[in-house]
Length: 619
Image (cartoon, rainbow, N blue to C red; front, side, top):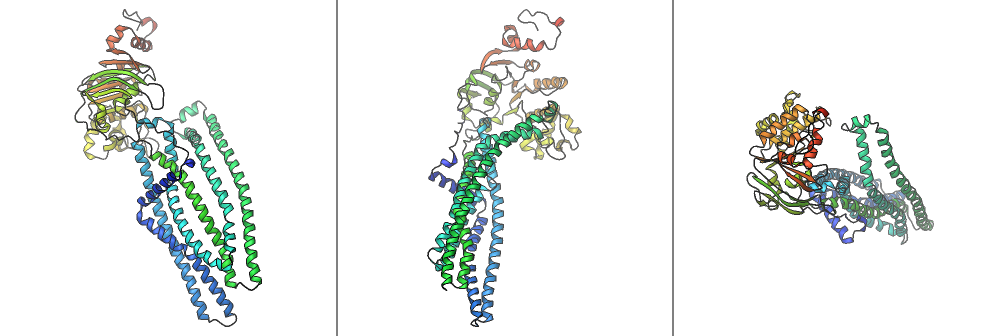
């Protein structure tokens, strides 16, 4: 059966408390696994630094009170110096802790970004090929990558900051309670309105970004068309720049309208929150001044109030805002976890395949993409044996490439069986079977790597493969690599400095070399001569004739000069086998294949050269 397509995840803001706690634990596990040592250092320095504000306030109070007594001659200079030394020592300790904390956070962040990026890439490598044929996969991948930089670390650091904030609030609050029972509650209450506003609009900002994910991807694609070397020729030739830029700007203006509405509402509510906060601080100040007028507050105690207001407000704001920030970051982390939770396909699951493949049989094979109603293939049956070539012919969308994806176990059939040497292919691990197959797809890869890496890929760095690479290059007719500045070590493409761009035909010859490099028992050619000139096509077809000996060969081609070499030709139409037979048999039948062949042949002969063919249409 095919890999199930994951249903769309529920919006992160609708998750239950249990699900949020699960995401929180998973996030903290990511952080700890990235670097336990730096995690411990960050926690220890943060908690230690959290006790310093109260210590500084208390020493400042003692120092001010002692200065007031010294004015009356009751305190020695030495006593004042002792308090000053303690205060300076606290400053130095704070600076040391801050330095250690920043270093630990930076190194932890770097380790975490690497670890999460690696998990995303590992997950992407484990997804089925089928997953990449749905736009939802790309949306989730983009959302996951967007959270790599700061979100996981943000959750961890904010939780530690919350713990540190409680230490700070408890110690500073104990000092401020000596000024009266209502002072501390009023100062704390003054912080709440601003935090509520920030939390509300932070969630709205998240929802706005989530709504814009698809449109932002479209806008980025439009921008890439204006800056891509691959599309620049057509864009210039057809004068497409203005239209692309107009569409790109339309998306921007749509984003801008949403942003302006959000900013206006945030500003209005933010001003109201600031006004309420100022009134509450004013009330707390009035209570302190009343006690000061009655001589009940010393200079040192008043300094505790003045300096403590900012400290308490900052701490309470950090506590409430930190809780809100943890909540918001967990919303974004859900994007990452939603991607990591996509169903994977283990290509190594199953029995290992041993030896070459001698026969391939499709037995009433059907295929349908999950969550769709249309069968891409229906009741496709055929058998091809070692030494034979099978060609697939049909109009675009007939199902030819889907047959190849099923044959190479990139997809699994939704009905029927694929038999290899008479055994059900579903029993064997896809990876072990794929080692006996080598493929060139119509949309073959043009890797912006060295020419050698384009041929050998995973084994390009193995010196033992040198002879194999050379043979594959020769068999593919890709001897032009010898004229490149550094031969096989020349970087290709325009993406990186020093790269040498190739023609379409040269890229296709390298792709053929990649196919020949793997000594496989099954060779699959999907439009192998589409980018080649007439001479190169002839040479490639002759090479294909040689390669069919002792192997199973499958061909997809719109060029009947290529198709004719096949022993068996399947004509697909609407996902079904409309006709099957050799070239001579199908031409004699005068059906769909003969009509397609004659249609293409008309492009090579003049009207005077066309003569009636006794067994069908003219050709």
